[in-house]
Image (cartoon, rainbow, N blue to C red; front, side):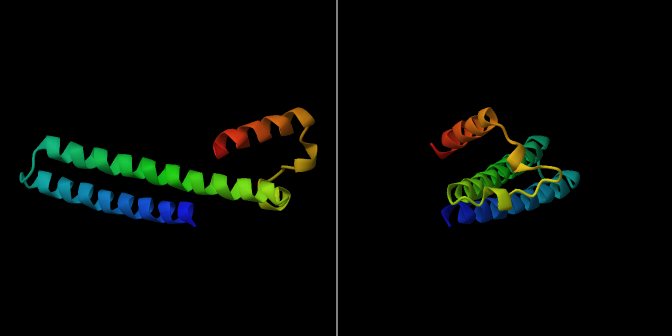
Length: 104
């Protein structure tokens, strides 16, 4: 629930930051703000988008970890042409190690 809330909140912040950048572009074209102000707004929008994507990735990673922990990973994977039964022991060990790093 916390990761879902974080993803939702950061997406809202990103949308607001984009509106701010759009407004800054309009004000810049009218000569009401400096180019530096415009760049600051654009940078803020970009940073907010990055944070929103990180939060979405964190949420998806948590979902995958949960699916794995309850033995539902096979049904969770939706990639075309992928068969989890074809994963070798070494690949499974590597995946478990990567998941452990994400959990920490």
